[in-house]
Image (cartoon, rainbow, N blue to C red; front, side):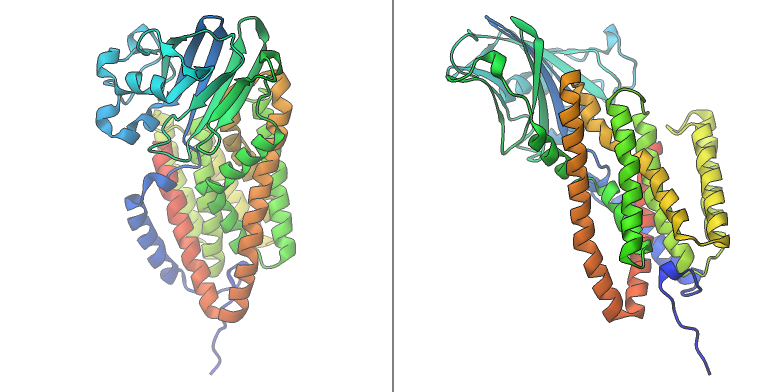
Length: 437
């Protein structure tokens, strides 16, 4: 009696039954909501400050997400958290004497003149900002015309060692000169003036700094890494990997540039939700192939999107009705074409389409920095190069391991791949629900 061989997922021929695949998928959906928030988004812990330095001190303004302030616990949040109102006079938070961060931030973000810390003229106060963000402003006083002037940041480093702080500095006597620097735990100082240089020679973050930022961003971006892993599970040969990664790279490089150059204004919340959907969809394709192209799987995806469209029509979801309708049509057409043709180039098209969306996600960090025009080119080039280096490093690390396991483990590797795909599908679905609502 002959038995039907089990094929690898990417072959597209019948293998494991769809019933067997739904078991790990259901398990993943059940346990993922219980996991740590550390994998809930690709964005880094970040804050932003602007400094207007005059001979007697500096005016300081710091922006940070309200969610970041919760790292000290709910008692440290402003009284109006979560902030759901539009910016306006009534959006200003509690007085400084009851606001933990109004007292804490001026001691963690300081200006040092000739070795002496500049002192706040008054406690920091909150100012109106966009929903989900908080803005603190204060003034520090000290002579700033000495031979050495340093800006130092320890914002949130005690509770978030990977926190990034973006500082932008302008001197009153050279208001047309604006410089910025990325401050981290390993590099917390921005030297504005030393005995060998004056304020006109202050150097902002260079190409290497933005390359490093891009590498750190992709390596800490769990949803981007999950998408890349899903692509590797769909590839059979190194040529497939090269085509998929090239398509992804070209697409996200394009939209990253468009967004940072202010030619396109992405809707951040909707972008994050679609990125989550991209993770789920590449995992669903792997499950669909392993289940012998069972039509019920893409039908279930389209049905679920239909439910999400209903929420979008009522305004309960960040994804507009038209956007979800587009995802429905895209998904239905993609699986219909894949079922008929099965061409590897269809998958490249899928990767390119979602790469456009991931590019908007990558742009988030640079957009919040509001860089001046003369700083955009090195920032954009370095950040994108860093993203590519980090992405290639992930592929180089994972692909040989996947090939080795596939050759040695045979059928057990196919089952392991299905389990990983089921987990990615559950993770992407969890992210989608979390971000859409």
